Image (cartoon, rainbow, N blue to C red):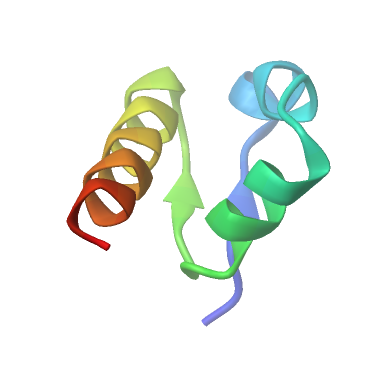
Length: 51
């Protein structure tokens, strides 16, 4: 599965750093709305706190 970023959140997604965008896209997620984006960002933070 390839990641998907809907037009609804594309503008917000593009404001993120290249590294963060890559981390999100590597997770093979569907970002349909801002809530999906926030959820993935929270997961990344949680994963990095455990490491």
